Amino acid sequence: MDRRTFLGGAAAVAATPLLDALSDPADTTTGQAAALRLSTTAYRRLDGTTPSRDLAGTVESHLRLIQSITHNAAHDADRRRLAAVGSEAAGLAGWLAWDKGDHGSTRSWYGSAIKAAKAAGDPLLAAYQLGSLAQFEAHSGNSAAALKLTGRARRSLGTLRPAVADAWLLTVEALAHAAAGDRRSADRALTAARAGAESLPADPPPWPWVFRFDAGKAAAVRVTCGARLGLADWARGDDIEALATGHAKQRALLVCDIAAGHLAGGRVEAAFTLTARALETGLHYRSGRVIERVRAVRRSLTTSSPPRVVRDLDERLHDVYL
Image (spheres, rainbow, N blue to C red):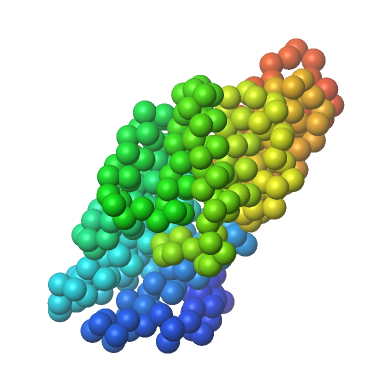
């Protein structure tokens, strides 16, 4: 069976039990918007167990279907509803492109997601997509762009300020400050984000958040900021709590950040033992983002006589072309 067909079928099976619950009585598209949204949600969940290179083509086909249905919608209200669905799918396409290491496509897809959210007239969705692009820019080292985007996200929210949106945007701002080398501002944002996350209700997060944002995820961002800032205590202090969050690819990225913390503290063997573990995950899922993060950790060590654990990593990386 063709992989794309299989993935589409898997998403449909995952979504079917929820369709009736999420149908909108005002939706005159005979449930199309709800069905398309549930498929997008299922694809987002498949991301944790499926290489992005396998899933991306299916998601892009799904997005083209959404765009076609949106174009043919008879009523403005339906076009707005379908534009919101298209925004979610474009945002997922951006996330998958990022994992593949295709930064040009990442920006393009996130730009499409922001534009569609605005066409939908949904300020919360627009803030989510702006924050997602800001997160990408922060991880890419573009601090000024990331902070500008988080500012736009907050302006989009206006007085509509769900607690989860505020806490999440604080972590994005922390990443941006860390990219600029601003420890004090990063720490301030992280402290506020942690406090906000700990006070969130136990209820499922509001749409468009599919996965719960909690103190563990705030702890993971602190580890990442510590790695960017070269602070060994930040990058190791919340290891256990942080590693309990996310799926395998996200944990591999975090392992690289923890490895960077060990390296900042002079523990080369421990750092590259962890980096080798992350590399195995990156190879298994063919994640360009994980592989590039492994390479970044390796580049941060400059020595004329690397220990055996580093030489072994170099041998593995030599034949990796992701």
